[in-house]
Length: 283
Image 1 (cartoon, helix red, strand yellow):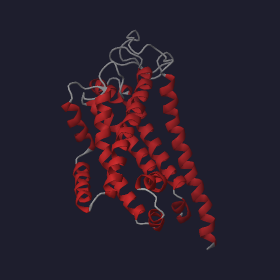
Image 2: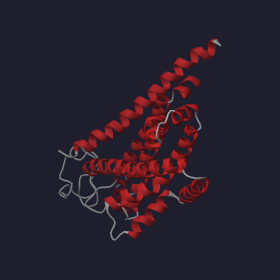
Image 3: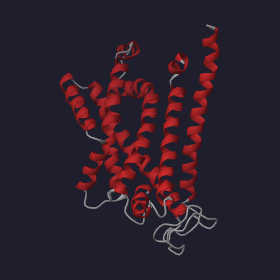
Image 4: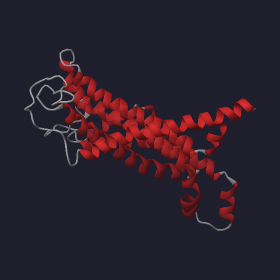
């Protein structure tokens, strides 16, 4: 008993440290993204730096094959990654939560149909589904990538929302609320959403990281943000021809994406501990 009690504070401390480290890594990208709105080390379109220069005091990450400052490009890529993550998660949450809650209240036949539709959409890889949506549009753009990823992620959010909402609907306080004459819309706002929100927030954080990776993959394939947008995926695609002569051109954007995804995953793990008291007690 004594050992368990001694271990609990240490585990809580580790969970808090995970949350803080994740928050710092994500906050660093947010700060860089906001900074690009008012300042960058060089003009993003300037090619006066010389081709494929190594990292130096003038160019902290070197230059690319066109002579542009790579650190400037990576900073702008951070802003694009956050735009895509926020936009895709926002669209996915709006569609998924709405359909998921409706499915929880639907008749059994409609509920089964929606559950099957969720399963079919989830069976498709997120990147493949996003590629189909982007390909269906006239031209590839940042907003078409955001819309495509939002639609692809909505199935995951919808399925989770449906499961959580149906679980809450079986609680005694829902029966008490209905007995007292509370309307279903009011029950959704007062009882269902507040009870499922902590779990959904963790899922949104994880979907954010997935959206950032998917956008980089789309840009690498030429289906994401077109030039002059400096997406990390496009920077990786442009650097693949010079990976042996100037490897930092591929290492830098890949490292930036890795740090963001690790930060988001740590943040989501810490957020789960903060938002779920039962999980904290079980630790």
